Amino acid sequence: APCDLWTFRFAVDGQAVSGEQHVRFTSQLLPTTAETLVTAVHSEGVAPVLTRRAVGAGQVVVISASTFRYPAGSGRVTSAEPVSLTGLPQLVVDRLRSCLLADAPQVNVRSKVGVYRFGDRLALTNFNDQGATARVTGVAGGPRILYPTGSGDVVPGADGTATVNIPQRGFMVLTVGE
Image (cartoon, rainbow, N blue to C red; front, side, top):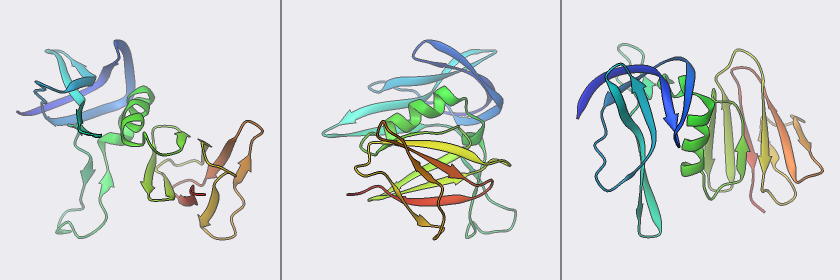
């Protein structure tokens, strides 16, 4: 159902969390057969904003946040700018990533860093004005940087976890396949 809801308060698995900024939701989910993973808390009550439903061997995950903004007059042919997703609290982002990247190596990184899986590649995009550090676990032999070439910002750990330093407003592409 259409709505225009702004909030910075959420509940994840019954735990209350707050974000740094308000997040806009333009659709209110009305799950009947889906599991509600995250609810938005606002003055009129709560509204489900992240749901999941098993379908065969897969799943359908729905988030109702306004996710991207396009520059005026762009005709949506330019790259979109992330809006609401960068304002989500860390616990909400971790829950979303756990659903969408379930079969990928585990990545632990702050909420204003995008994590994208493309086959045996992992792209990390830092939307912060300062560098960010990600911990990547579950890659045999550790991840290797494909882009930018010549960068030496992967530090292997003794526990099978590698630390990756992502520059401010930058991105890295890692290989995470064998």
